[in-house]
Image (cartoon, rainbow, N blue to C red; front, side):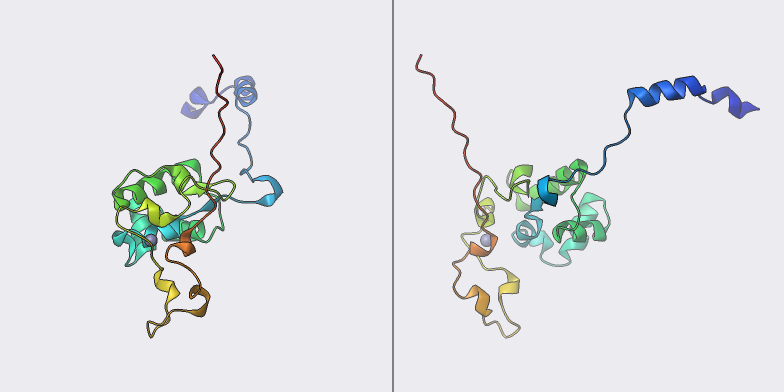
Length: 165
Ligand SMILES: [Zn+2]
């Protein structure tokens, strides 16, 4: 009966359960909203992800391609670990410091409004999906300026009251 020697006594098990509350249900933002992210728009600014991008990002993050796909489609909220890992992979490919807050948002705003401004090399662009197969621009993009497609509301800068002293 070797197994019984290592079994946690029932009273101790109940005790540790009191100390460690059950894991919380996945967090949802108020009104059922999810996190928003700019993973796809940032990937379009990384040459590494131009070909087979979702597969490459999945490998870089050591997760499945479907995890990346669901994230990009906004079907799931990422765990904190996944958000950190994806941000780090994008930062490495972009080649400049990239805050996780520039990638994920709880209210749709980001510190830098336009993803083009996060890139060290983009001065304003249109994405590949703005063009038809014959290289003409799709009608829904014709009235946009370069960079408009990946522009989000800018995060309000909190006002810090200055002391008179
Ligand atoms: Zn751009």
